[in-house]
Length: 126
Image (cartoon, rainbow, N blue to C red; front, side, top):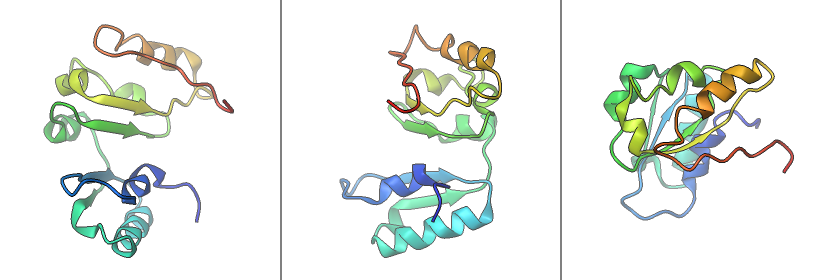
């Protein structure tokens, strides 16, 4: 199995019973693989899987203190806009940046959150 959907699959370990995971996966195959693993791990009732996500959908599902693990293959700059999705300001964010596409785009994203978040860049391989 490849790394597709690792964000959702990481939710399958021991967690408090109140813990829930929402996976937003564009690819049907990835959603099916995630559903299968949730069943094997006995957490299918706590994992919800949906298709692609845009800013409007993200704004609807976030609540204060939500952990957002974001790997959207270069669309993070367009998706993670606190002016359009205000709940991002009080959510926890882990974002995979795709620097190879355009380092300036990643810098722009990093500059959006210092007033509300502790921003830490972790370089690949560290």
